Length: 466
Image (cartoon, rainbow, N blue to C red):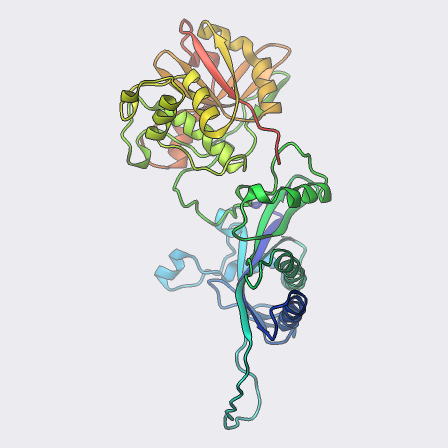
């Protein structure tokens, strides 16, 4: 799988609105569909015209792709050369433009954003306007199409090559939008087509799919099955739910939580050892977040929230991460706790985590019992199998502490083992260097566990759905 911050590629992303306006003489189905198709064809001709302009965001670079006019840059330059023209926040403050290229490894440098624009004026003699008035009854069907195309650009691609690929992708997207619009029309009501990008396993890479906005994922299973077949994907996990949409690396997450802090860590080296890790994306939940003071009692709640975030961000569930109160209410509803438990500061453990996952998400879990911490070192095979087959975060509780296990490094020949731990007891800001350098997310040895305390591990099972 090609990574967005690869040294050999950048992503070119083109976005902009196109107005779909249809004057309908009849609201009968067939004439409406013909008029809509003619309007989409007019839009395809519009983006192929010389009035189409691509503007590189936060830069002076303008490109007329259909007449090979490039301002500030030459068409035969590598696509990555555009990065030197993009103004950063620091440059805005100083009023200077950098003469050096951005570091391609930097998150903000991996995506080049472009805006789709149309010239409103045309060269020619100036003439006086002529006004005419025609009385004609018709129905106006209009919508704004949110065009959004993204392509990989390798280090050998020129700017001209990248623009040609983008324009082809734009035309394809208009065809896909026409198809979705006609399929999902309800009378004279249009469901605006919604383009989404998905990063699929090799050899597919980054693909764009157009879905009807406003239609929930549960009603789009037939379309997903068709896509799974088209891209030869397994039919036991989601790839094309909205939560699976690719998150571009230059866009911050709106909730403020860190994602996958473990990815910056170096794996431990063991003799004949292998690393088995959580699959997919999760959010790091810990003490004192969300204006909730749970310091000293909420560690298992936070571990549960991290697990719930995994199921949400893999597209298995649409509901958000539950709050402490919602977790407590769920335990009351299943009969595990009394009503007075809601709003309390009482601890929960692995068994309660299992019950909440089942009640709120419909997710089943296996429980692994360990009579003392020293026995955890012998559970390498079971944990390795879990991360290979299920790939979900594991909650472990023992004594008065709870943690999240994100993976293990394990040698089958020697039995040596290391645990990748996400610690919910952290109380600081969302500072990735502090979290990883201070060990709040890090690799731990068997002595990390209390050797005499018993532990219960909750191993959530991945639903077999698409």
